[in-house]
Length: 119
Image 1 (spheres, rainbow, N blue to C red):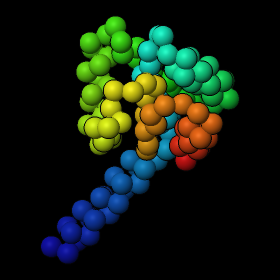
Image 2 (cartoon, rainbow, N blue to C red):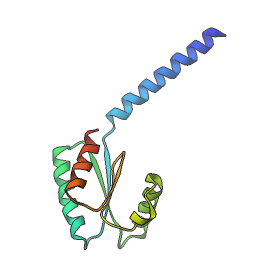
Image 3 (cartoon, one colour):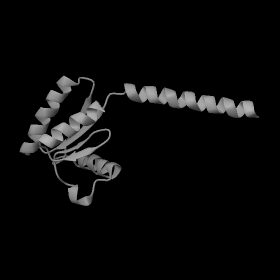
Image 4 (tube, rainbow, N blue to C red):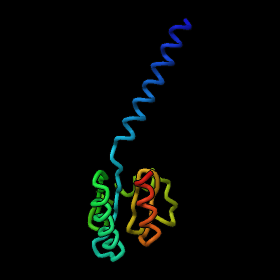
């Protein structure tokens, strides 16, 4: 019986180790929600283009939310997943990294997004 428990324990450790290795090799994803008429969104889009050149391994998904009900639904799902407070919902740009979200765009947001990608 002890041998079986020991074997299961070792197998579990191997599985966790394998998943940790896989997680490290997955490219970070940035989900960017914007409006085509928003100047802050345009500035962030330019910033993300430069970030993609600096870190070619990242994946940037862009969603225009004003004219797309489907993209609005996706944004709502991100709000729920990241537990975005009601008072912060409905504003663009809205950017989601693997660990944090950002509403609006300024110098602090730039640093925050890039720091998330470095982690």
